[in-house]
Length: 378
Image (tube, rainbow, N blue to C red; front, side, top):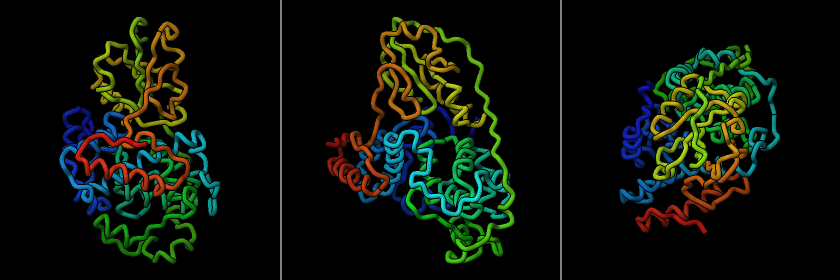
């Protein structure tokens, strides 16, 4: 069991209760900052951004205190909405800009956690150990891979996604593109002084111990020159043929929808579908798969099936097949329910988060002002 990220519902709900938005706003970029550690449960659909927002409002927290935390939740929704809009084009360079890219592999030293930058190497070890990396460190790693080693972002992004318990294809892909400059046209760079400030190190003489003006002009550092291909291992569980009753509705769950409360009062077949085709395209580690299966144990009556949706026994006999809308699973048959958005109806027609946030912020402020839990979007 992963001690850093328990999978029982009381522990997850306690993390929502423990959110300190004021401390979060001040310290979130620091190594030991007051972050919620809710991202694995949000990414896997155990809880929703709406649920977290409603909890904050119900506590009577003032908008000025909650604003930064809500804005970070809004980034998650923005990326999901962008995926809805772009569909599979999300996985290509959004701006078709590959300036400076010289390879489609990744630095061996990142794969092994041997870059020589203490905070980054420690972060890579934690990623492999616990399936988590601080968000600020993710930016540092992406900057080294894309902007110093000149690697095109898809392979190193897939490597990080493989290990992340909170692996969200939209957030991970867009964040890597943001650092690489293919999302907003500007590359992100870090230096040793910045890393030391936020991650409590005091490292001198590293290849990052230079000014922000000098770093973009550097040749590829020696420690990032050796390149390798990320060779993932995919292991899906062996599962029996599910025992289903076609006279009842069939609810389809997946690795992004593990909500234990989803229509739980309805007598239905409940099936966690793990499609090999999805995991061949977007592989995850054994640790991530174990985490998904452990979270699924919270769903009453769930059965797990490894197979494609069209191979579900007697699929055509079900009068109702129900899933939650998601860009990765558009091919599911039947009814697709809307997800539990903070801002339902607020779609994305552009790649500017701040245009999205301008609309979302107005709705959120109204919700806090009314001390209610409903935030309608017209």
